[in-house]
Image 1 (cartoon, rainbow, N blue to C red):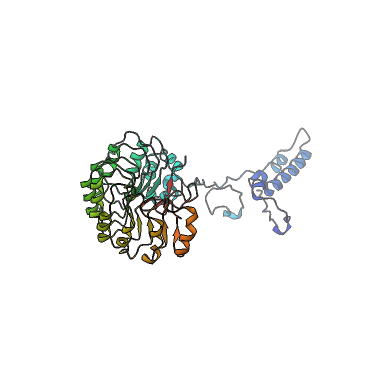
Image 2 (image 1 turned 60 degrees about the vertical axis):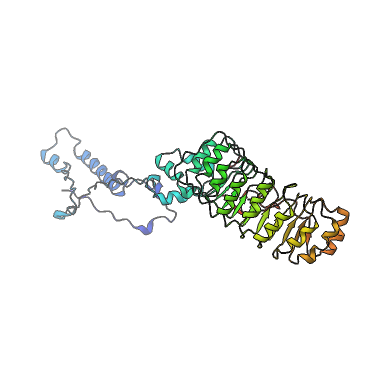
Length: 433
């Protein structure tokens, strides 16, 4: 019986510049050195056999002598290769490799997916909501919709409906257009800050939003048409800190009084240039909270009187910024009354035409803490140097617009990189036109 000799490979004889693993020849018997040696031995035996069997009558003994050995059956059992001192080359079955597919998105936990979605801008986030039901649920998770900026968006009724249902906390939506809209939610909204300044929104639609608010602290409805129902709903937000109703109309004096009595924590109030009569003005000055530090009560030419200022000063001794511009009934006798405001830093009396230049020169002595004075329309440019000489520590006519309770400070340039902030903070999700 013929046994196959074991061929030993000397690794030291391998060339130094060996081929990469993927380029090496197959390790099957057809490509191994062992099989190559076997083929050479077979060729030699065939040649020798042909020499002895070249006659027609070949003895039986010779045929038996040169007959090829019987093949041994390959053993597949492990550990049986060297039984009976015979070496048998057997090919073991290869183990089937498990599929090594990449990690599926379906296997990621919700917490990790939310962290990934948190990094996406608004438009991309909305596109992901149509992938599947699970992603739709995650995309509209309230943790991703803490603050949203929809400035200038048109026909935004459906978008606003869905955004409000995400339990959003901060909504910036100035100069937007909202068509007929009615908020259909039943739970109270979680809004803390909201800016709808100069937007076009039906009064009924605004009512459906405000009546669901109980946690508002910062609100700007500048330039909007309101109603008594809206003001009454605002009164249910006792934590209100800054309220901007500049240029608003459509509500009565009694509801203003109720609002100011309920929102006793207001620190900044801008209620300038509203469609007010004498009753409205008296409701404001008679019910303002003593906690008010910034007040804009400008624009009431024939409605704000000296007696109203006296009531105001008596109630609100903590005022630091006061804007009484365009109150044409006020004269120089208002200064002794305002002198009681020991913390007054910024005073605006622009276009109060009955106050003369001579009366302004003593303001530096009357208000030692004063640092900003706006008297646009009262002082000509040629007289400004002499007035500044009398009050060297006061900046005169440096703030043409009031920033009281407004979401964006009046001193900020429109179009700047920080133009999209709301009360000094940017919204995380912003719709880019």
